[in-house]
Length: 444
Ligand code: 2RA
Image (cartoon, rainbow, N blue to C red; front, side, top):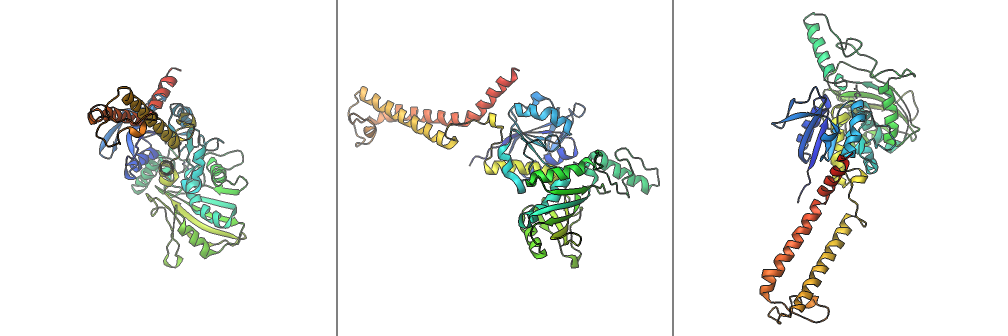
């Protein structure tokens, strides 16, 4: 069986999420025909290792997206805003991890284990949620499915990798300086992050919540399809290199049962239950770094709210919270046969692809047999030894036969050629459509 492979681009390839995307595309064996890496002009020209192969980073420019199937955006929102629509114009599917489009009505915001169906409505851009939202929902969603969530309170414990490579460097440098009894320098965070926690992730809004806290509220409502869900979040940066944890207290519409709650978490594909208090077993950020699923534990009945549970979720912010979620979206779309291209770039046949191809093929066969049946009649070839088979049955008016030499030297090679050309035409349709789009769009 032929497995289609894809021309992939990564914008922001030199950043923390970009690096994870490169590694995950290889380790998850995503069918990549070609990978092109893009970054800002100052990172262009750098070379990046992909499975032992050196790839040169190019400057992210609109024309660089021609011919690509999927472009992963792992860059800041301002870059995604400027370049993602350009990639879509050139026929690419954009999988964006920034916050630029997450709350746009025509952009699906997707966690594949929760709302993969939303990808069917995409117009070229699909957004991946904020890291702390994705991690929190890996615990909240299965419980919501069973008990119906009414309100939730999130408190996050977010690692410095959520801020980027500079922040990882700042934490490591401060720890080295502390050990050497030197003065600790800070650039990225407003306070020392080593041996401290900072109750601020993102910048403050007029309501005194940070934008990280607002994102957790708004994005959770959109992904769960519950616009009226009441959520309050407090987001905190902790001196951890990788993975985020979220303490959740959630109130439900139905009475909750701890055994049943543990059962639904254990059965959910995006989570692993780590919850044996008597053995001191619960998820930690170290244990859930570079792990595909999120860990859920510390499950207990909440003592302040009715019909409520409190629990703890840990997950890799660079994987489930960013790079891996985007790749999982692409993998699931390929698996489910959801078109990767924006609707205006999808080749549409009046009766659907399969029916149209079958009808076209049947029509072509009918034409070829009629044509050669008629030709055989016209040249009045003598009735020969194909024992009533040959093209007898194809002639409507009078039975005829064709000589073997006519079949083997002339008719069969021509038919073989016609069918090969037809097969090739079908295979090339998508490529031809790409080229047409390129020529058309290239003129503006
Ligand atoms: C952080 N959530 O951890 C952000 C990254 N998107 O800072």
